[in-house]
Length: 341
Figure 1 (cartoon, helix red, strand yellow):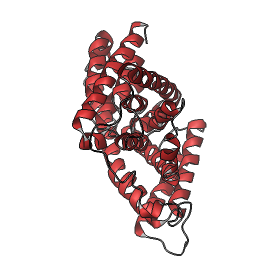
Figure 2 (figure 1 turned 120 degrees about the vertical axis):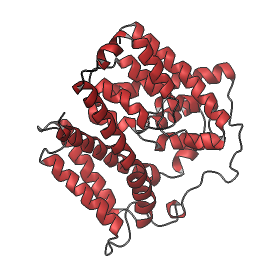
Figure 3 (figure 1 turned 90 degrees about the vertical axis):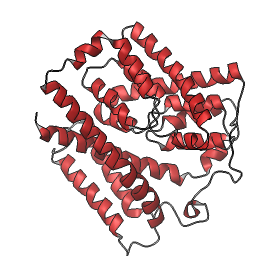
Figure 4 (figure 1 turned 30 degrees about the vertical axis):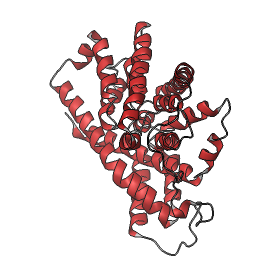
Protein backbone atom coordinates (compact mmCIF):
# COMPACT_ATOMS: atom_id res chain seq x y z
CA UNK A 1 0.00 0.00 0.00
CA UNK A 2 1.58 3.26 -1.20
CA UNK A 3 0.96 6.27 1.02
CA UNK A 4 2.04 8.93 -1.47
CA UNK A 5 -1.00 8.78 -3.82
CA UNK A 6 -3.33 8.56 -0.81
CA UNK A 7 -1.78 11.67 0.74
CA UNK A 8 -1.85 13.50 -2.62
CA UNK A 9 -5.53 12.68 -3.12
CA UNK A 10 -6.33 13.79 0.43
CA UNK A 11 -4.52 17.10 -0.08
CA UNK A 12 -6.22 17.68 -3.44
CA UNK A 13 -9.71 16.99 -2.10
CA UNK A 14 -9.18 19.03 1.07
CA UNK A 15 -7.64 21.90 -0.89
CA UNK A 16 -10.55 21.98 -3.31
CA UNK A 17 -13.04 21.91 -0.42
CA UNK A 18 -11.22 24.81 1.25
CA UNK A 19 -11.10 26.87 -1.95
CA UNK A 20 -14.79 26.39 -2.71
CA UNK A 21 -15.76 27.12 0.88
CA UNK A 22 -13.88 30.43 0.72
CA UNK A 23 -15.73 31.43 -2.45
CA UNK A 24 -19.15 30.28 -1.22
CA UNK A 25 -18.64 31.95 2.16
CA UNK A 26 -17.74 35.22 0.46
CA UNK A 27 -20.75 35.09 -1.86
CA UNK A 28 -23.09 34.19 0.99
CA UNK A 29 -22.00 36.92 3.38
CA UNK A 30 -21.80 39.68 0.78
CA UNK A 31 -25.54 39.15 0.19
CA UNK A 32 -26.32 39.21 3.92
CA UNK A 33 -29.95 40.12 4.56
CA UNK A 34 -30.95 40.18 0.88
CA UNK A 35 -31.83 36.48 0.66
CA UNK A 36 -34.11 36.51 3.69
CA UNK A 37 -36.01 39.57 2.51
CA UNK A 38 -36.49 38.07 -0.94
CA UNK A 39 -37.82 34.78 0.42
CA UNK A 40 -40.32 36.59 2.63
CA UNK A 41 -42.22 37.70 -0.46
CA UNK A 42 -43.69 34.23 -0.89
CA UNK A 43 -45.20 33.18 -4.20
CA UNK A 44 -44.95 30.16 -6.39
CA UNK A 45 -41.13 30.21 -6.57
CA UNK A 46 -40.53 30.46 -2.81
CA UNK A 47 -40.15 26.74 -2.14
CA UNK A 48 -37.96 26.32 -5.21
CA UNK A 49 -35.74 29.16 -3.99
CA UNK A 50 -35.41 27.55 -0.55
CA UNK A 51 -34.47 24.21 -2.12
CA UNK A 52 -31.97 25.95 -4.38
CA UNK A 53 -30.33 27.59 -1.36
CA UNK A 54 -30.04 24.15 0.23
CA UNK A 55 -28.34 22.85 -2.90
CA UNK A 56 -25.41 25.23 -2.36
CA UNK A 57 -22.35 23.09 -1.47
CA UNK A 58 -21.26 23.18 2.15
CA UNK A 59 -23.17 24.01 5.28
CA UNK A 60 -24.03 27.64 4.56
CA UNK A 61 -27.11 26.94 2.46
CA UNK A 62 -28.46 24.51 5.05
CA UNK A 63 -27.66 26.92 7.89
CA UNK A 64 -29.50 29.68 6.03
CA UNK A 65 -32.62 27.56 5.54
CA UNK A 66 -32.62 26.40 9.17
CA UNK A 67 -32.34 30.02 10.28
CA UNK A 68 -35.22 31.03 8.02
CA UNK A 69 -37.32 28.18 9.41
CA UNK A 70 -36.67 28.95 13.08
CA UNK A 71 -37.64 32.56 12.38
CA UNK A 72 -40.96 31.53 10.86
CA UNK A 73 -40.09 32.54 7.28
CA UNK A 74 -40.41 29.15 5.55
CA UNK A 75 -42.55 26.07 6.08
CA UNK A 76 -41.69 22.65 7.48
CA UNK A 77 -42.07 21.12 4.03
CA UNK A 78 -39.71 23.69 2.53
CA UNK A 79 -37.08 22.91 5.16
CA UNK A 80 -37.41 19.14 4.65
CA UNK A 81 -37.04 19.62 0.90
CA UNK A 82 -34.04 21.89 1.36
CA UNK A 83 -32.32 19.29 3.52
CA UNK A 84 -32.91 16.70 0.80
CA UNK A 85 -31.30 19.06 -1.70
CA UNK A 86 -28.37 19.71 0.64
CA UNK A 87 -25.26 17.52 0.53
CA UNK A 88 -23.16 19.34 3.12
CA UNK A 89 -19.39 19.34 2.73
CA UNK A 90 -19.60 16.11 0.72
CA UNK A 91 -20.76 18.23 -2.22
CA UNK A 92 -17.27 19.71 -2.51
CA UNK A 93 -15.68 16.27 -2.20
CA UNK A 94 -17.93 14.84 -4.89
CA UNK A 95 -17.14 17.75 -7.20
CA UNK A 96 -13.47 16.97 -6.70
CA UNK A 97 -13.77 13.22 -7.22
CA UNK A 98 -16.47 12.85 -9.93
CA UNK A 99 -17.65 16.31 -11.09
CA UNK A 100 -19.99 15.27 -13.94
CA UNK A 101 -21.92 12.73 -11.90
CA UNK A 102 -21.92 15.08 -8.92
CA UNK A 103 -23.72 17.74 -10.95
CA UNK A 104 -26.27 15.15 -12.07
CA UNK A 105 -26.78 14.13 -8.44
CA UNK A 106 -27.29 17.77 -7.35
CA UNK A 107 -29.92 18.25 -10.05
CA UNK A 108 -31.75 15.12 -8.91
CA UNK A 109 -31.60 16.19 -5.27
CA UNK A 110 -32.95 19.66 -6.10
CA UNK A 111 -35.86 18.34 -8.14
CA UNK A 112 -36.69 15.61 -5.61
CA UNK A 113 -36.37 18.00 -2.68
CA UNK A 114 -38.77 20.43 -4.34
CA UNK A 115 -41.24 17.62 -5.04
CA UNK A 116 -41.12 16.35 -1.44
CA UNK A 117 -41.44 19.90 -0.06
CA UNK A 118 -44.59 20.58 -2.09
CA UNK A 119 -46.03 17.17 -1.19
CA UNK A 120 -45.41 17.59 2.55
CA UNK A 121 -46.98 21.05 2.57
CA UNK A 122 -49.95 19.84 0.54
CA UNK A 123 -50.62 16.74 2.66
CA UNK A 124 -49.87 18.16 6.10
CA UNK A 125 -50.68 21.80 5.44
CA UNK A 126 -48.25 24.69 5.52
CA UNK A 127 -46.74 24.28 8.97
CA UNK A 128 -44.35 26.84 10.44
CA UNK A 129 -41.79 26.40 13.20
CA UNK A 130 -43.34 25.46 16.54
CA UNK A 131 -40.30 25.77 18.73
CA UNK A 132 -38.93 28.85 20.47
CA UNK A 133 -38.45 31.54 17.85
CA UNK A 134 -35.91 34.31 18.01
CA UNK A 135 -37.72 37.64 18.45
CA UNK A 136 -34.87 39.71 17.07
CA UNK A 137 -34.79 38.31 13.56
CA UNK A 138 -31.76 36.96 11.72
CA UNK A 139 -28.59 38.23 13.33
CA UNK A 140 -25.83 39.67 11.19
CA UNK A 141 -22.39 40.59 12.43
CA UNK A 142 -22.07 44.33 12.95
CA UNK A 143 -19.43 44.57 10.26
CA UNK A 144 -21.71 42.83 7.76
CA UNK A 145 -24.60 45.28 7.99
CA UNK A 146 -25.19 47.48 4.93
CA UNK A 147 -23.78 50.55 6.71
CA UNK A 148 -20.80 48.74 8.27
CA UNK A 149 -17.37 48.53 6.69
CA UNK A 150 -17.27 47.23 3.15
CA UNK A 151 -17.33 43.54 2.40
CA UNK A 152 -15.97 43.76 -1.12
CA UNK A 153 -12.46 44.89 -0.16
CA UNK A 154 -10.66 46.32 2.82
CA UNK A 155 -9.98 50.01 3.14
CA UNK A 156 -6.25 49.71 3.72
CA UNK A 157 -3.74 47.28 2.23
CA UNK A 158 -0.78 48.41 4.29
CA UNK A 159 -1.17 45.82 7.06
CA UNK A 160 -0.79 42.06 6.78
CA UNK A 161 -1.95 39.95 9.70
CA UNK A 162 -0.48 36.55 10.49
CA UNK A 163 -3.79 34.84 9.66
CA UNK A 164 -4.08 36.54 6.28
CA UNK A 165 -0.45 35.78 5.47
CA UNK A 166 -0.80 32.15 6.50
CA UNK A 167 -3.91 31.57 4.38
CA UNK A 168 -2.37 33.37 1.41
CA UNK A 169 0.81 31.29 1.59
CA UNK A 170 -1.18 28.06 1.90
CA UNK A 171 -3.25 28.93 -1.17
CA UNK A 172 -0.16 29.96 -3.14
CA UNK A 173 1.53 26.64 -2.31
CA UNK A 174 -1.62 24.79 -3.38
CA UNK A 175 -1.61 26.69 -6.70
CA UNK A 176 2.02 25.67 -7.25
CA UNK A 177 1.32 22.03 -6.36
CA UNK A 178 -1.60 21.83 -8.80
CA UNK A 179 0.28 23.65 -11.57
CA UNK A 180 3.25 21.28 -11.21
CA UNK A 181 1.02 18.20 -11.11
CA UNK A 182 1.97 17.18 -7.58
CA UNK A 183 -1.68 17.10 -6.52
CA UNK A 184 -4.77 16.78 -8.68
CA UNK A 185 -4.81 15.65 -12.32
CA UNK A 186 -1.40 14.84 -13.80
CA UNK A 187 -2.38 16.18 -17.23
CA UNK A 188 -3.90 19.49 -18.23
CA UNK A 189 -7.67 19.15 -18.49
CA UNK A 190 -10.72 21.18 -17.52
CA UNK A 191 -10.60 19.84 -13.96
CA UNK A 192 -7.04 21.06 -13.48
CA UNK A 193 -7.80 24.45 -15.05
CA UNK A 194 -10.94 24.87 -12.96
CA UNK A 195 -9.05 24.01 -9.80
CA UNK A 196 -6.36 26.57 -10.58
CA UNK A 197 -8.82 29.33 -11.48
CA UNK A 198 -10.90 28.72 -8.35
CA UNK A 199 -7.81 28.75 -6.15
CA UNK A 200 -6.57 32.01 -7.69
CA UNK A 201 -9.99 33.56 -6.98
CA UNK A 202 -9.88 32.27 -3.40
CA UNK A 203 -6.42 33.79 -2.99
CA UNK A 204 -7.74 37.11 -4.28
CA UNK A 205 -10.61 36.98 -1.79
CA UNK A 206 -8.17 36.25 1.03
CA UNK A 207 -6.02 39.23 0.09
CA UNK A 208 -8.76 41.85 -0.35
CA UNK A 209 -11.46 41.07 2.25
CA UNK A 210 -11.66 43.09 5.48
CA UNK A 211 -10.03 41.70 8.62
CA UNK A 212 -13.41 41.02 10.23
CA UNK A 213 -14.50 38.77 7.37
CA UNK A 214 -11.14 37.04 7.25
CA UNK A 215 -11.07 36.29 10.99
CA UNK A 216 -14.73 35.38 11.55
CA UNK A 217 -15.41 33.48 8.34
CA UNK A 218 -12.30 32.33 6.49
CA UNK A 219 -10.14 31.60 9.53
CA UNK A 220 -12.48 30.66 12.38
CA UNK A 221 -15.16 28.95 10.29
CA UNK A 222 -13.50 27.48 7.21
CA UNK A 223 -9.83 26.99 8.10
CA UNK A 224 -10.11 25.99 11.76
CA UNK A 225 -13.48 24.25 11.85
CA UNK A 226 -13.90 22.52 8.49
CA UNK A 227 -10.51 21.86 6.92
CA UNK A 228 -8.87 19.72 9.65
CA UNK A 229 -11.95 17.53 10.00
CA UNK A 230 -12.36 17.09 6.24
CA UNK A 231 -8.69 16.19 5.80
CA UNK A 232 -8.77 13.72 8.70
CA UNK A 233 -11.90 11.98 7.42
CA UNK A 234 -10.77 11.84 3.79
CA UNK A 235 -7.34 10.52 4.73
CA UNK A 236 -8.83 8.02 7.17
CA UNK A 237 -11.38 6.70 4.68
CA UNK A 238 -8.82 6.39 1.89
CA UNK A 239 -6.38 4.58 4.19
CA UNK A 240 -9.08 2.23 5.45
CA UNK A 241 -10.26 1.34 1.94
CA UNK A 242 -6.68 0.87 0.74
CA UNK A 243 -6.01 -1.46 3.67
CA UNK A 244 -9.16 -3.47 2.92
CA UNK A 245 -8.08 -3.75 -0.71
CA UNK A 246 -4.55 -4.82 0.27
CA UNK A 247 -5.99 -7.38 2.69
CA UNK A 248 -8.22 -8.67 -0.13
CA UNK A 249 -11.39 -8.08 1.87
CA UNK A 250 -14.24 -8.52 -0.67
CA UNK A 251 -16.06 -5.32 0.27
CA UNK A 252 -17.06 -4.39 -3.28
CA UNK A 253 -18.40 -7.88 -4.04
CA UNK A 254 -20.34 -7.93 -0.75
CA UNK A 255 -22.00 -4.60 -1.58
CA UNK A 256 -22.90 -5.79 -5.06
CA UNK A 257 -24.34 -8.98 -3.55
CA UNK A 258 -26.27 -7.14 -0.82
CA UNK A 259 -27.28 -3.75 -2.27
CA UNK A 260 -30.40 -3.50 -0.09
CA UNK A 261 -28.32 -3.69 3.10
CA UNK A 262 -25.95 -1.06 1.74
CA UNK A 263 -28.95 1.16 0.98
CA UNK A 264 -30.31 0.74 4.50
CA UNK A 265 -26.90 1.47 6.05
CA UNK A 266 -26.53 4.63 3.95
CA UNK A 267 -29.93 5.91 5.06
CA UNK A 268 -29.40 5.16 8.74
CA UNK A 269 -25.93 6.71 8.83
CA UNK A 270 -27.41 9.73 7.07
CA UNK A 271 -29.23 10.61 10.29
CA UNK A 272 -25.89 11.56 11.89
CA UNK A 273 -25.56 15.37 11.76
CA UNK A 274 -21.92 15.27 10.71
CA UNK A 275 -20.15 15.23 7.36
CA UNK A 276 -17.39 12.68 7.93
CA UNK A 277 -19.21 9.32 8.11
CA UNK A 278 -20.92 9.86 4.76
CA UNK A 279 -17.59 10.19 2.97
CA UNK A 280 -17.36 6.39 3.08
CA UNK A 281 -20.23 6.12 0.58
CA UNK A 282 -18.83 8.93 -1.58
CA UNK A 283 -15.43 7.22 -1.78
CA UNK A 284 -16.89 3.78 -2.45
CA UNK A 285 -18.97 5.20 -5.29
CA UNK A 286 -15.93 6.97 -6.75
CA UNK A 287 -14.10 3.63 -6.70
CA UNK A 288 -16.97 1.87 -8.48
CA UNK A 289 -17.89 -0.29 -5.49
CA UNK A 290 -21.24 1.37 -4.75
CA UNK A 291 -24.29 1.77 -7.01
CA UNK A 292 -25.61 5.25 -7.77
CA UNK A 293 -28.88 4.46 -5.99
CA UNK A 294 -27.11 4.05 -2.63
CA UNK A 295 -25.20 7.31 -3.08
CA UNK A 296 -28.49 9.07 -3.88
CA UNK A 297 -30.19 7.61 -0.78
CA UNK A 298 -27.26 8.69 1.39
CA UNK A 299 -27.32 12.19 -0.08
CA UNK A 300 -31.08 12.54 0.41
CA UNK A 301 -30.92 11.79 4.14
CA UNK A 302 -27.61 13.39 5.11
CA UNK A 303 -27.05 17.13 5.11
CA UNK A 304 -23.63 17.38 6.74
CA UNK A 305 -23.89 19.34 9.96
CA UNK A 306 -26.40 21.77 8.47
CA UNK A 307 -29.09 20.54 10.85
CA UNK A 308 -27.04 20.99 14.02
CA UNK A 309 -28.55 24.44 14.75
CA UNK A 310 -32.06 22.96 14.57
CA UNK A 311 -31.01 20.05 16.80
CA UNK A 312 -29.83 22.59 19.36
CA UNK A 313 -33.05 24.62 19.13
CA UNK A 314 -35.58 21.76 18.99
CA UNK A 315 -34.63 18.05 18.93
CA UNK A 316 -38.26 17.20 18.14
CA UNK A 317 -38.22 19.31 14.99
CA UNK A 318 -34.88 17.80 14.02
CA UNK A 319 -36.31 14.28 14.29
CA UNK A 320 -39.40 15.24 12.27
CA UNK A 321 -37.30 16.51 9.40
CA UNK A 322 -35.05 13.44 9.52
CA UNK A 323 -38.10 11.13 9.54
CA UNK A 324 -39.36 12.71 6.33
CA UNK A 325 -35.93 12.46 4.75
CA UNK A 326 -35.47 8.82 5.75
CA UNK A 327 -38.72 7.90 4.00
CA UNK A 328 -37.73 10.01 1.01
CA UNK A 329 -34.27 8.43 0.87
CA UNK A 330 -35.59 4.89 1.04
CA UNK A 331 -38.22 5.68 -1.58
CA UNK A 332 -35.94 7.24 -4.18
CA UNK A 333 -32.99 4.97 -3.49
CA UNK A 334 -35.19 1.87 -3.69
CA UNK A 335 -36.80 3.06 -6.92
CA UNK A 336 -33.43 3.75 -8.58
CA UNK A 337 -32.11 0.38 -7.40
CA UNK A 338 -35.16 -1.35 -8.85
CA UNK A 339 -34.43 0.07 -12.31
CA UNK A 340 -30.78 -0.94 -12.14
CA UNK A 341 -29.12 2.26 -10.98
